[in-house]
Length: 175
Image (cartoon, rainbow, N blue to C red; front, side):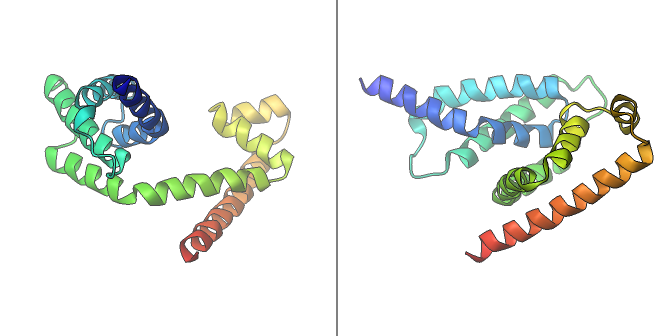
């Protein structure tokens, strides 16, 4: 019975943190395929060491430490490739990403709320541009609008989202 409880606890913590851990890994290792490999190795390492996890510590920080070491192992295995960050850069990125973790999460949450507050037409345009990865030229052809108009609309929307996110984060920090 204790084993089931520990398994469930691990799965809840892992599933609640996996997206943030992946973002952390992608900060250190921008190749999505390599990041997938590292995520897999990280989950296995965490599973094996979960009995050492102290429940009063933040799981995300504990898990990111494992991910960091898995990135280093991956880099060591892949040293035949020439395009890598140097060790000092990896360490600096890892440290900075962990320091900014809470702020990034707060900004992402604020962005989600701000996106919901946009008029439907603006939300649709943002979805077409960013969710699909379409270029402005592709969008212009698809929705039969001049590219220049789409650039201006997206700039206006981005400015509004930036102001909204900044305001929401400031309000959250103040409370």
